[in-house]
Structure formats: C-alpha cells, structure tokens
Length: 111
Image (tube, rainbow, N blue to C red; front, side, top):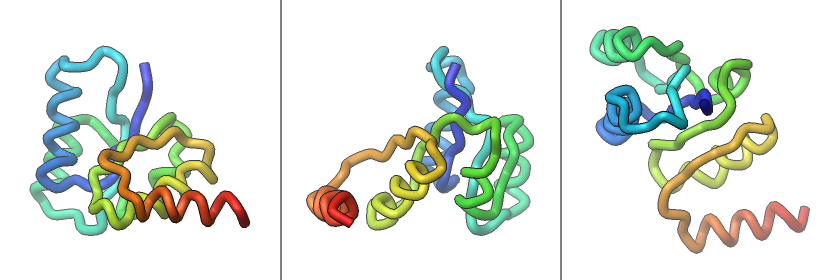
C-alpha cells in the first residue's frame, strides 16, 4: 500500500481522495493533505478522511508517513512541486505535463 499525500484540496483534490477512500483503489491511501487555507469545511473533510492536514507543501513532504505525493494543484506549479518532491525522495504524480514542464526539467537537469 502506498501512503500518499494530496496537495491541493479543492474540488479535484477532494474528488481524488473520495475515490480512493470509497474503495476504488487497493494500492493507495491518503495519509496527509496540504492546502494554503484551512476552512472549517476542509478541516472536517480531513478529519472524516482520517488524514493529517498541513498548511504547506514543505511540511507535508517532511511527514515520514508520506511515501508519494499526488498533485491536485494548478499545472503552472507542477514543475517546482515535482522538483521539491524529488529532493525529498518522494514519488510524485502530476497530470498533464506540458511543454513548459519538459523544458523546465531539461533546464534543471543541465545545472
């Protein structure tokens, strides 16, 4: 079982968490989440889903229970977030990489 952290808990992030928690995956479980703002609704959601809620991506990456990260954030943030995950030796899943992502990865690899 992969213990994952979800980054971005808007509509899409919550949809992913609910799909996993409703038994649609026996390979992954969410043990933590990160969002910049913590509304009462979000706190209740995290409590219902039984995961730790962090106010920063960096804190989530430092959680020893997190094996992998799922990004449910704007695509423009993915390059930096993937790099941060790699620096913390976490596996990272991001959807729809763009040409700018490939270009940024290429630039980083030559440094």
